[in-house]
Image (cartoon, rainbow, N blue to C red; front, top):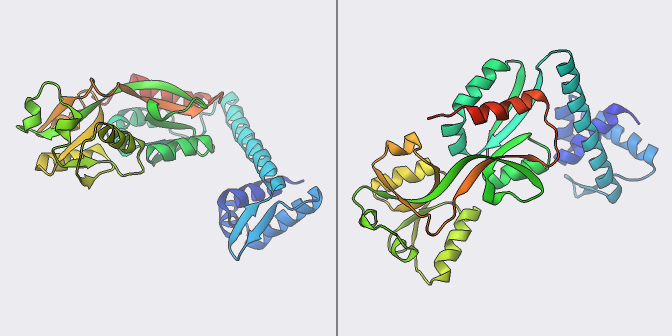
Length: 296
C-alpha cells in the first residue's frame, strides 16, 4: 500500500468525484483511477461502486477504509505541525468558521492580532450558518467554530466566550417600546422579520407562538441581524435577535431593544471543536487571543 493511494482514495471518497480528486491532488484522473484499482487489488475487495455515470458510493469496506485514511491523514498533518513546532517554526494551518455577525463584529481585532503574531500560519476563515459549522467540525474540515451553545451537542467540546441575550428590535417610538414586559401575544400583532425556516431558532420561535395560539405574519426572512436591523429601522416590521450586550453597530441605529429574558434563557457564543482533540500551540494561541481581545 502506497501513501499516494491513501491520499487519492481519501479525496475521491470525500469529493465523490475522480475529477475533483485529481484536481485536489494535482494528478490526472487516469492516475487516480489506477491508484484505486491497485488499492482494491491489494485489499482484495471493492471500495467504490458507480451509480449511473457520475455518482460514486462507498462499499462497506470503502467506508472503513475512508475512516482509516481520514485518521491517517489527520495524524500526519498533526505530526508535521508538531515537528515544525519542535524546530521552532510557527507554521501550519488554522481553519475556522463563524456566522457573518460574529465575523463582522467580534473577530477583526483578534484576527488582526493573530496574523501579526503568526504571519506564517495559513488561515482559512469561513462565513457559514451555525449548523454548517457544526458539520464542518464533526467532519474534521475545520479546527475551530463559533456557534451558540444551545446548538452544540455533547459530542463536541465547547468553550464559553461571550454571553448573548434575546431581544426584540423595534423602531424608536414603536408602541411595544413603551411596554415593560412584552408578551408573545403582543408581538404577534405586528409584522415579523425572522430567520429562514431552516434555522433552529426560527422553528423554536414558531412553536412558542403556536403553543399559545397566536397568529403571526412573517413579512421578511433575514439571515443576519444587520439586515434585520436595517429593515426594522425602516419600519417594515419588528424582529427577534440574539445579541451581545452593547454591540456598537446596532447601537448606531434608531432602534429600541426590548429584553426578552422573561421568555428566553441567556445563551453563549462558544468556541467549538472536536472532543478530545489536542490543538497545536499556534491553534491554541488563537483561542487565547480571542478571549483576550475585544472589538468594543
